[in-house]
Amino acid sequence: MAVLPHGATFEEFTGYVLERRGTVPLMELKELYERRLRLQSVTITRGETIRKMLPPEDRDLTMREREKKVLSEARAAGHTPERV
Image (cartoon, rainbow, N blue to C red; front, side, top):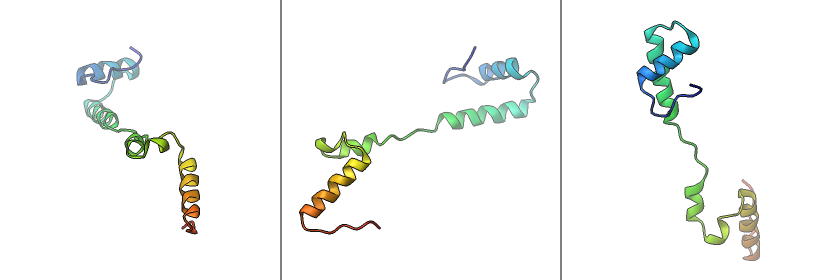
């Protein structure tokens, strides 16, 4: 077994760790399992929700392209935007 499945039970996890490391104290196994569960709950945000809120013509632009567009629109409207 190369990698444990996402929903692996504590018993499956224990078997996996013991197979790899040999003898491990029960307390350490519990801590490792809790850490594994916490790490699985981490999510990576890629900005998809924010992009869905943008107008359709802006959704495929990068952050830099969007910034240039906003700045050029502001200059065309007579504003002088400054970086903060």
